[in-house]
Image (cartoon, rainbow, N blue to C red; front, side, top):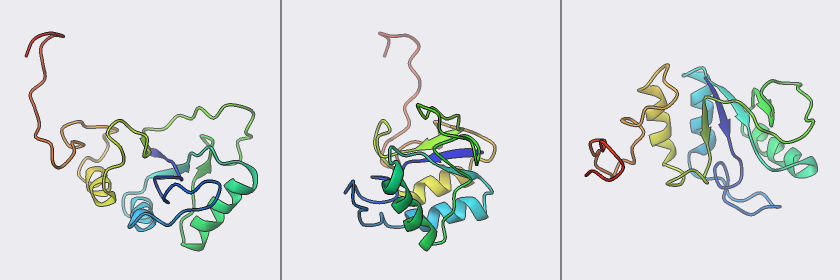
Length: 138
């Protein structure tokens, strides 16, 4: 599975253009997702130029390498807007925010071959509600 990962607010705390403090367990979890679960990780960030290189260096120093950066494939030239195709996006700006990294890992581990399973990917504190059968029905 190809998983696109944001940098600021997802791997590190927001401090752009600086690099913020690492979010606990982010790097370790991403390395497990690569090594154990065998997923391709794509760094998907608004950072460019020296700010992008700083983010890549930060990750590389911690042993995290990406399959591609702001592209679907390695060595694909960046020719404009970065709309990439991924099976899943991990980003702090998702609806509901960024779940705990342990929850992300366990969700991926327990749903092999699935891109998104809403029954598994529920916030751990929310109870699962049955689907409604129409716009206005309860």
